[in-house]
Length: 307
Ligand SMILES: NC(=O)c1ccc[n+]([C@@H]2O[C@H](COP(=O)([O-])OP(=O)(O)OC[C@H]3O[C@@H](n4cnc5c(N)ncnc54)[C@H](OP(=O)(O)O)[C@@H]3O)[C@@H](O)[C@H]2O)c1
Image (cartoon, rainbow, N blue to C red; front, side, top):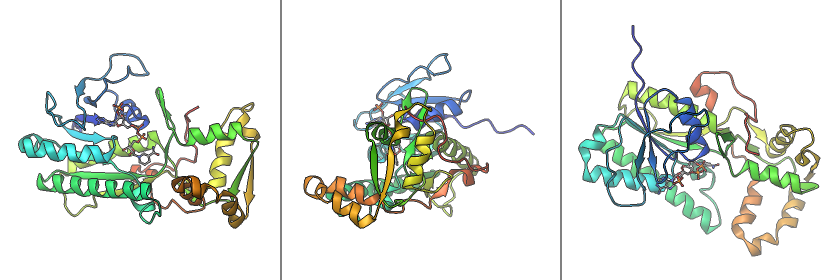
């Protein structure tokens, strides 16, 4: 029996590491890049993907209607209102899609009781966008998955993350890095794992169609759950033998002492102080990527890492 041909993809957020990884994994299947900037030339050579110019923050129409499975690694608070506007203008165009997969963030869960205004606003924006997207898709009977990944790291093609790579830079600069004990739990996900899960769900949604009994929201993490200190140690071990990041000593302080030393930050930036406080919080226990993909777990860190 012939396998069904893969669903065509329209991809927003192609210029993120996860977008680059998805383009690479989807090599050979129909894929259009939508966004503000034309796609980068593929790292493996050849022509860039077809391009659909579209700024999600502009009210204007795109030249052609997006097709197939709509995947977005763009900020969900720009993607959700854009899809709602398009659905109001052209309901038939939206109904012709095979489904939608959009990236939100696990911050919608982990920062919901934040004390600082910046994080509270972020949670509000994420939650409103998730609700708007769910309503738009339900009204068009469009299959939808909202992925809420935790910390995304890694390099794909020319693009790398700006979180663990910054921590690695810090390890290179400092001789000692104090930590609140071993710190809380983390479950970082490599951009290639996120892209693989997205592609897998795209094919699943295209086959199964609209099923309101399926959960829409999927909190997602990598395959390893480890303490903050272990995450840093593994990052050090993954650097080249002569790399200065290896020399930084991780100093586990009693958590109360650590927070007392960090307390002046509270006056300067409550948001940063809360970020330091969160080093001790468990931001983990999300669905691991390997469970969705049905493959063996991959230990942290998955390579390649951003320099
Ligand atoms: N980084 C993390 O640790 C993390 C954690 C949890 C969730 N997330 C979510 O995961 C996704 C990817 O995150 P990231 O940090 O890897 O992304 P990123 O590097 O910040 O890239 C964002 C992407 O969205 C596109 N975009 C932004 N505004 C747009 C607009 N108005 N119209 C069209 N495209 C637009 C950007 O395109 P341009 O090239 O035009 O700028 C870029 O391709 C995002 O949805 C983010 O909220 C990230």
